[in-house]
Structure formats: structure tokens, C-alpha cells
Image (cartoon, rainbow, N blue to C red; front, side, top):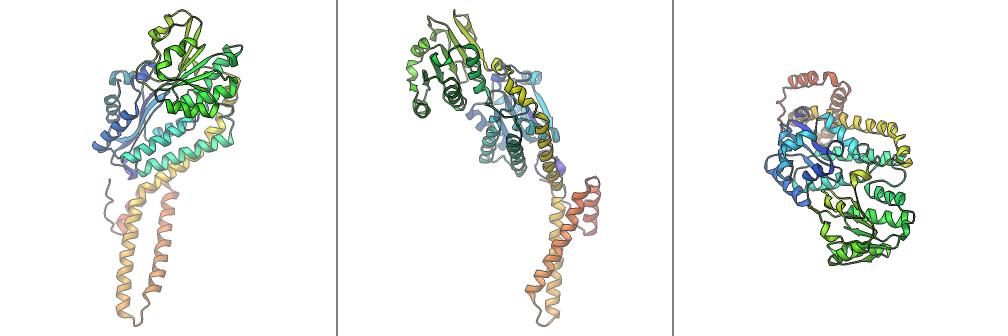
Length: 419
């Protein structure tokens, strides 16, 4: 990427791990809290990295960034999570330059999601970009790339059936309930955690189960009350968690804690209890399965579901890929123009200096010389010349380097300064 004059970093990388090779436990080791993300971004800036985006979701943790070597980014990730370099190397992936760009398009459009057509990731990418911009590590390349991925995501959502029906892990949990309970509307459901996944799950529960025996608990009670008010549901204090679990037929856990919030000592049920853990890292201790009547399902199991809706979405994959190819090609064409941007800028500066010198000479030589008209005419001529050069350079990428060298030699331009 060093030829494109977009970063001090030599190459553009994507480093990360996802549900494809890393199980929930390993993904939990590399999960980034909001505080950890901010600390990582700050350290990146302190280390001179001028372009970097970080995402950490239930399905994946990724860093997109410019660096001399990918280990710079791997080291950043490991220093701000509980993961080790050895663990990372076993399950991770590293993409470079154009492959890294293609990967972001696949992720941002839901083609690489654990549940095909899950469009929640695009909002997470938007948030990640804003955080990077606020931290001072989002260069113009990232703004252009994120906007291109957003455009592709919108078109795929509007022009294909890949997002038909409800999507995401939150819907998968509700579908599991619908498939495993004869009368889902009559079950006592307790939802613990009302962050984004919790909110989406709650909405899907109300919509698809028609159940009004849903109780919400969140560490911050007013957040739960806002959601409960929308759907006329019951809210209980965090201190009531154990008592409410005892009354529940189904417990859905969607908290954002870094350690299990549901353990064996919280559960004293006299009836069967289904627990759906939608959290990364896992927020339900594995050993709760040892309790009689308790069944624990983690989001990795939920995400493996295949239903008619998902099968229908698969039919739209070729159309989605065609849209991505179109927009990705446009982005790469813009990227190619970055190669010659410094030369074009230097040429324009040189022509303007020649113009100013000539106008100054004619002003002294011609009585009643009209500066304003001379400026307008010469500026238009310069712009026409610049357009010809730019169109030539855009038109034949195979000879761009030769053309740039020739322009620099002809006009005796200074060598472009790299960032």
C-alpha cells in the first residue's frame, strides 16, 4: 500500500479470529471490552499507527489497520485481551492489502456472518470507525472504505432476499424456543441483560412468541425499564435474580460481562430450566449443566441452525457477490488514483507557478492588462490540462508508473514526499 500515499504503514492488514475456527471459549479470550478497545486505540496512536479500526462481537474479533508487519497488530490485540500469540496463531487469519479490503466487504455485508444475512455487523463497523476517528487513528482511506462497505450493505439489503425474514443470533434464540416448546406463549421467560443483543432478543420474543410472561433484569435497572415500557413487560431488581431464575422456564443471558454471571449456586430450580447463553465470553458457567433438569445452549449451537429462511437466503449469494464486486471495483479504482495524486498536485502547483510568472511578465509589458480575465482563462486551460493527465493515468493502470516518471521528468517536479 506504500505506493498509494495513504498511510505511513507499509501494508493494510486484517488480523482476527472468528466462529469459523475459534470456539466460544477461545473467542472469549480475545474479546475486547469497550474500555479495552479505547486503550488499544490510544496505544496504536502512541505507537504511530495512523489508520486502525477494531471490532469485537460475539462472532469475531478483528483489527483492520496499517502496519509495517502484521505482528504489530497481533501484539496490540494480545496486550489488551486475555489471549496469547500462541493461541492466536492456531485459529486466526491474516489478510493483506486487496485481500484485507475484500474481507471487510464480506464481513460488512453479512456474507461472512455466522448466520447468513446478519446485518448487525455493519452498524458495529460504523461505531468502530467513529471510535477510531475520535481516537485520531481513522485516515481518509478508512472513511472511503467504510462508506463503500455501507453502500454495498444497503444495496444487498434492498436488492436481494439475503436478509429476508428476521436475522441474527437474537432471532436464532427465539426460533430455538419456538421449535422446542409446544406452547411458547405460556412459558415464564427471564431475560438477563438488556444491551443491544438483549434488546433485539426481547423484541423478537414479543413479536414471535406472543408471550407476556417475560421478566427483564439488568444491572442498570433504568435501561431495562425503558425496554419494558415499550413492550409492557415486568422488570425486577438485580438483587432478585436468584428468585426469578427459580420461577423461570427459560433463562436468556445476554450480559456483556468478562466472566460468568450465572453459576451453579444461583440455580435451585424444582422444574426444568432451559438456559440460552448469547454472550461472548460465555456468561453462564459450563458446570450448570450438571444440575438436574438444566439444559444449557450456547450461541454457537444456535448459530448452526439451518431453516428454510436461511436456505432461501443462500440463493441470493451470487447476486450479493455481484453487488460487492461492482462497489469493490469502484473503490479499488479510487485507490489507484491515490498513486498519482501527489504527482498531479505537484504538476498543478508547477503550472500555476508558470502561469503566475507569465501573467506578471505580461502585466508589465501590456498597458491596461486585464488581470481578472487572464486569471480566468489561464486557470481554465490549466484545469483542462490537468483533466487530460488525470484521465490518461486512470485509463491505463499498467503504464501508470512509467507515465508518472515521464511527467515528473518533463516538468522537473520534485519527488513526491511519502507520509
